[in-house]
Length: 124
Image 1 (cartoon, helix red, strand yellow):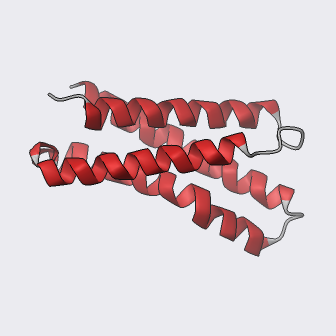
Image 2 (cartoon, one colour):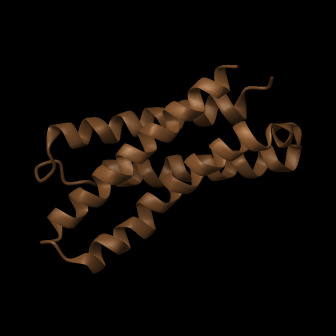
């Protein structure tokens, strides 16, 4: 039951974060599309994929959460996503980004950590 509440919240937070990330990167790169797209490939895509995987496994294929191979793959994927986003957050130039954007990024980092622990590391 807790996963069915956490997953939509994680999906919503991830959607807002990706939107903020793309908008901010577009502004930081002097409104050039290619660098913004390259940033999206590096940092936003893992967030999008992890949110979609969590929603898929929670709502459409919950029996796959009992499979050890699926759980191992999901754990690895979420830990990689957490690492990539943490790297992005800690290497971000905080003088060029607004405080609200940083707040959204920190919420995303904590939501990814919570989703990783709650969905894939706690045994049911």
